[in-house]
Image (tube, rainbow, N blue to C red; front, side, top):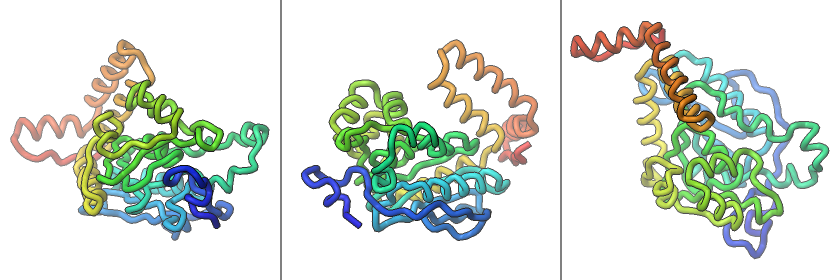
Length: 290
């Protein structure tokens, strides 16, 4: 199994990971996984934590890992105690890219016929807020995976990049689209056309990440943010998330119209009544997700 540096000799640092990945297996909810680790964090288990766990290959993304990730996301989505989810990797890498060995011999026909990568963006369908806690490399598919999350927190040594051009291809899971929306055309174009990486600090300045923390406290800070989110109404949080995401898909007029409809919809919930009543009575709201 070749290392990343051996894989692309002559390029600086890791690009997309080369790593073997066994065929996807089926797991029941709550069972042990092969490529990820899951647990519940926070008071009363309100935060679902998913940790990518292929450290020997810097968490290279393969079909089996994506399948397990989607299963874990669905399990936390269905868990009434969980109000937010944190997705992270290791200290050296969030995910250094897609599994090149797995896709090396694919053809146009096989990609098109089997709709390759179609299941990679399942994360974007999750209604509960998802926070990416990125330490180390978030390159190629790893960067794309982080950008599918709702909030990105970065460790101070994190690096982001879309180096597919160095492999003779382009990003295929939203890299050219989400990156451009996050950082603007010029920087996105530079990153995609050169394969160059940016630091956590540059990513924050460009608007790709919201906060930067020391490596050792990053996940803890992400969990703390997730706990704060989980303390609010789950149904109203889902509405807020839908409205913010719509800003990337609609015109301003269309987005404002949707926002108004969702705002009106909150008045059909018990949580909206409880929240405003608690404010008037100067007490903490007791949301019941109704």
